[in-house]
Amino acid sequence: MKTSTLAFETAHWDETPSVILAGVDEAGRGCLAGPVYAGAVSMPRNVAERFYAGELAGLTDSKQLSEPQREEYFRKITEHPEIAFATGVCTAAEIDHLNILAATHLAMRRALEALSVPVGFALVDGLPVQGLPVPSQAIVKGDSKSFLIAAASVVAKVSRDHYMTELAKLYPQYGFEIHKGYGTTMHMEALFRYGATPEHRHTFRPVRDVEESLPGLFS
Image (tube, rainbow, N blue to C red; front, side, top):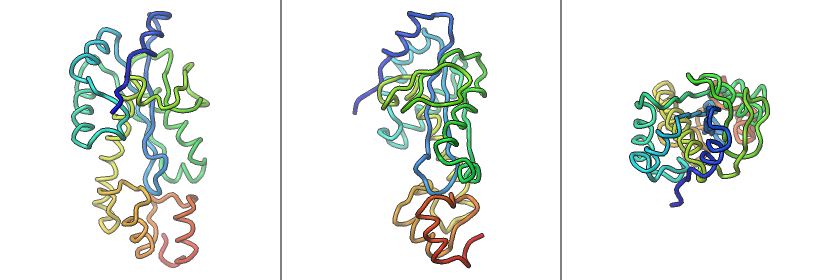
């Protein structure tokens, strides 16, 4: 498993040491149900270097980590007083209204705006993002290359997983606590049996196809 590095962060800190830096990533973009989440994480250089070499060594793309690993990293990130973190959310209804790309970008904007520190620059996973409140650098596969993006990846993923686990209590027949809204066989079987919920993304083709075949089941 390839771990993240501090190379992008170090380049920024060396060039503009007075500008506060954050990493940003999303979770849930490819799901059929639930919101898309974005995480934003910022920490001072000395804290990042200490954690990179110590408690957060091995931090990488949340998809490459086991659930226990993600939960442990999440705890360490969110409980440390010198680490600022925030999430931004776009609901399924907003995704249907805006489209998933625009909703993802909006969630990222909301995450950055929710941070408790005045961030001046962001490292963002993936392709360039429109509408962020600060200048940014897009890094393809940044969640496996940038330490701050990897931290944001964990914050976004674990926060969304917690939401979907709670959502499962409202809709126990769908198994959201297991597949977290992704289009697994279990999820699709539940869709065909029970129809969609208000938390489903009705503009996504698998959901739309089920709706068209079983229109009476949908709310």
